[in-house]
Image (cartoon, rainbow, N blue to C red; front, side, top):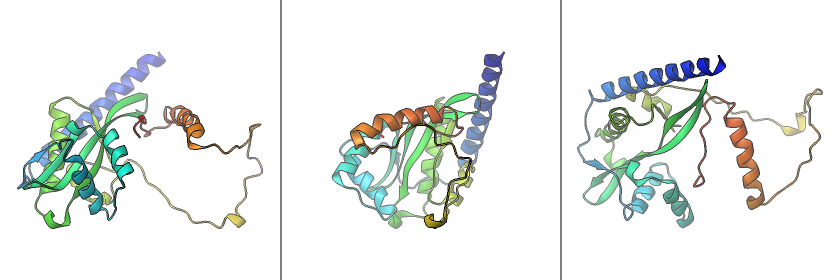
Length: 222
């Protein structure tokens, strides 16, 4: 009985996600297209593309960071707008599994979204969002697309909506105490180097994410 209920919940979740994705595609089909052609980047174009996107956030990328980002990126699922041979905008998709009520759903993790300040207000971002959502819908890819935007207000026009909220608290730790009924268990706390800590943290994360709605899986490259 429990498995039947879970299967029903999964089907309903997929149907809702598919409807929202379709609405996003229909809306973005009504708006302007990019004046510059969009296509995936090649291996040779990856570094200038990644640096350009980092620049839009006022950041830089070290050689190691670029290598790590390249290892985690599926080039076929990147997008770039070029002005001549110079990348001026980009976006990408990371394939993920997302915990939802009743199970897991394949999810498109939207990342590396940026438009160079020299090429904004030309419909390029809209065109990239339109291209991504259309590809997901028409090619039967992931039924859910998620992102963590730097400016949340931008993405509602493309069909995205808030899934959760965050809160930042600043406290004086000298005045903070654990509740008297806090159960600290029988374990001990140890410091480990990265090589020792990573497999332990991965195990904890995988246990937690299957029980927490909205958590994605993590891949080795990340």
